[in-house]
Length: 143
Image (cartoon, rainbow, N blue to C red; front, side, top):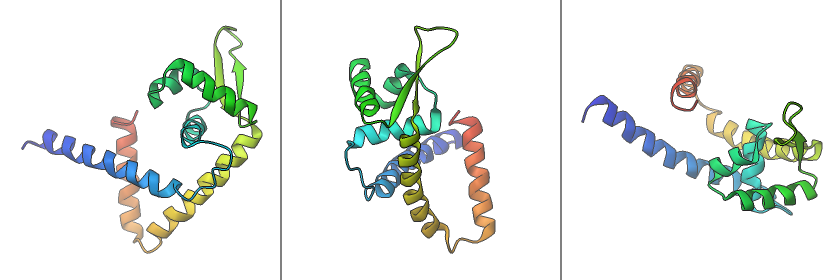
């Protein structure tokens, strides 16, 4: 197996591990009045806002009508809002509302506590290497 094949196999294994990690870090979240899909949409909007409906639809693998319906529900719950593009009034962006920002801040706070437990005993040198690895991934594969 050449180095590119090995790198691909490592990537596939890490994608599966990241899905499991995401599940583990979010399973204890108090969802209250939102579904797991709505939470995933809010999480995506949090890191990519402002974002279009089509970008959400594409990334989450949801049809446009279903994406519109979920965004409408989240808007009705006061968790996100639509903003018109000042240069093209036909185009709308989705962003979190103040309440949505607070809710996702609590969710990320919960995940941060779990993460901190995992890295609590990790040597500084290893954390530095992990940070460098994330930077390389971010500038190459995860653009």
